[in-house]
Image (cartoon, rainbow, N blue to C red; front, side, top):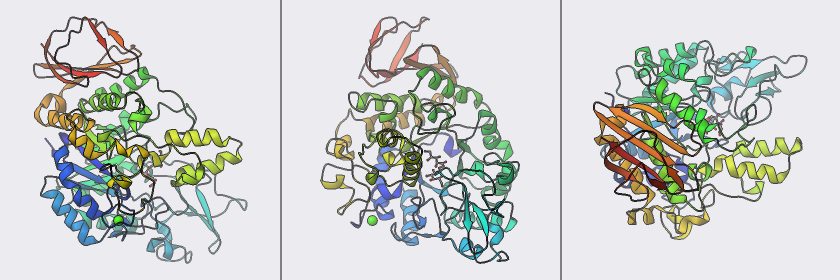
Amino acid sequence: MKWWQNAVVYQIYPRSFKDSNGDGIGDIPGIISGLDYLENLGIDAIWLSPVYQSPNDDNGYDISDYQAIHPDFGTMEDMNQLIKEADSRGIKIIMDLVVNHTSDEHKWFVEAKKSKDNKYRDYYIWRDPVNDDLPNDLKSTFSGPAWEYDEKTEQYYLHLFSKKQPDLNWENEEVRQAIYDMMNFWLDKGIGGFRMDVIDLIGKKPDEKITGNGPKLHDYLQETHELTLKNKDVMTVGETWGATPETAKLYSDPERDELSMVFQFEHMQLDEQANGSKWDLKALDLIELKKVMSKWQVELENKGWNSLFWNNHDLPRIVSRFGDDENYRVESAKLFAILLHLMKGTPYIYQGEEIGMTNRSIQSIDDVDDIESINMYKERLDEGYSKEELIHAINTKGRDNARTPVQWNATEEAGFTTGKPWLPVQPNYKHINIEAALESDESIFYTYKELITLRKENPIVVWGDYELLLPEDETLFAYKRSYENKTWLVLANVSKETKELKMPENNSIERVIMSNYGRNEIDLESIELQPFEAFVLELK
Ligand code: TEU
Ligand code: CA
């Protein structure tokens, strides 16, 4: 067994975790001060969103020096200290590896722009104009064309994200070697591994308009493994928006020596219209969600490994998204925690999820920080959408939802900072905060804590087979896990309505393992499930 197979990972978005010096920006000393809290929660590793030198066009996902810490976050000494302090609590640090692109202020790009024969020119992807226009119609994820014209050298460069995030040319061997050296610099510090940003894009063939899953992608990942990860007890998780169970097995089959696991996003795209983008909203169909999640559970059963998540720094808060953050915030937050953490794979908790932090609600584009939302708003206004529907889309799906400061206590600015936070604190911090959560046995925090303990103490959670029950039921999400001679049943009423339960088969209950309504006894043949009720049972 690998350490990450029964581990739970906690994601920190450093700008918003904890500010130690009153400048309104979360920082590494702030993270160090939160380690005792995370140890109490019981997590094994922290995925740290980027803390590197960056002009912050995309909040640190535009890196100008991979081997320097942004002064907003602290120093390299602080970083070494974080690794050490975390290690002494049994927590590993997973660094964010953003190597599909750099910042345009990275020295490689600054050089590359100087002339066509600069030594670094080929580190990036340059193309001549076609008929005085763009090389082709590839689009940036952050709106507009993926090509930006450089007046001086009269060529376009590729940027699949913002124009301040030029794509690296992985076909260039020197680029790859420089990345491996940088990875080894971090590995030598004793980190626990890497989360690899949009890693499925590195094998792109822009002339053929292939971005994800390019022909040499898996060769590059095997080479990366060979020259950096091999023989090290680290975990890697690739961010792969386009992964299917088939490709996920290629990435995560241990015999192929690529990655430990990938983040797949199929379940996170069910509330958007087919052929639309994330902004084209659609209500979630629970039957579809069950089908997709179960497919991944079953398909990766014997080969490969799943990651399990509802949230990250790009996604809206799950309690606001699929739950009910007004009337059943606590119940629905616990329900989604239970549903996810009883599945097979490595669970990820995004900061604030463990206390049920909610989406924000803004009225005007002036209140938006995120480049993705701002660019989309401009583009769609021009296309004729109304302000109201765009603000609604941003409130529903925008990335700032996940990025508001962590709510530590009920004092001013939620105890996140003594200054003015870079993004406003949510007004609900007075009752939704870590201090209050720690004080109440009934809080969402203790549900997460209990789920982490369950995973540590019960091999069935880590290794058990998965079977979906009642696939056609519109509100019940029910599944069984079985291992050796044990069977567990997870059952959840994903709705605001009560529901009479009639289990099709006779199931006799050994014990109630968990219940978000505090039930000690349950009769599956006659029970009225409450709104967003969820429980875990051991069956005889
Ligand atoms: O995200 C990849 C990505 O495609 C997202 O931009 C995604 O499409 C969008 O946010 C959906 O909500 C990664 C990082 O997680 C993200 O923060 C970065 O902005 C992006 O890569 C570029 O590095
Ligand atoms: Ca600070």
